[in-house]
Structure formats: structure tokens, C-alpha cells
Image 1 (cartoon, rainbow, N blue to C red):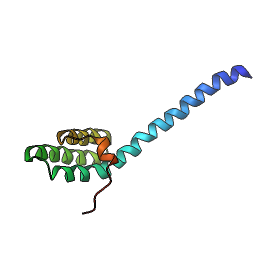
Image 2 (cartoon, rainbow, N blue to C red; image 1 turned 135 degrees about the horizontal axis):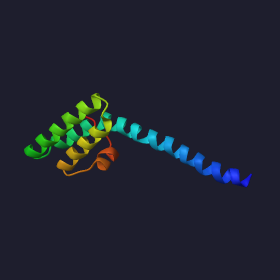
Image 3 (cartoon, helix red, strand yellow; image 1 turned 60 degrees about the horizontal axis):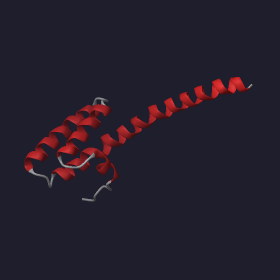
Length: 100
């Protein structure tokens, strides 16, 4: 009985972790595609023109990637756009949306 438990328990934990790990990034990517472009555009409105142009170009490309299902790659573009503007994705995700 103990031998069976010693073999089955790690396998069960591994399989559970694999399912949890696989589901989490997809949910986070959906939230990124939905909210990051608007937040980056808000920050770009008050940035230097050259920085805003670069960031908005990356946002446009990220939105196209989201539309085609490339959410991971889109997240990279949004992250690069945030970096151009002097912030990061963690700050964008934690910031409350502003009413306009």
C-alpha cells in the first residue's frame, strides 16, 4: 500500500500541476489582449512623440496578433510597448482603468 502511494502521489501532483499551469497563461493572455492596448494608449497620449509612435506601432501589431490567436506573442509586443513608455506590464495590469 505504501509503495503504491509513493508512486501514485507524485504522478497525481505532476498531472494536476500540468493542467493548472497550462490553464493559467491562457487566462492571463486573454486579459492582456483585452485591457493592455487601451492602457498603453492612455500612457502614450502623454509620452514624447517618438516614444508614443513606437509604442503605438507595437500595440497595433499586438492587436493583430491577438486577433489571429497569437496571444503569447502579442503579450511580448505589449510588454515592449510598455517598456518604450518607461513602465512594465505588471504596472499596467495592476493599474485601475481610468474613466474617460
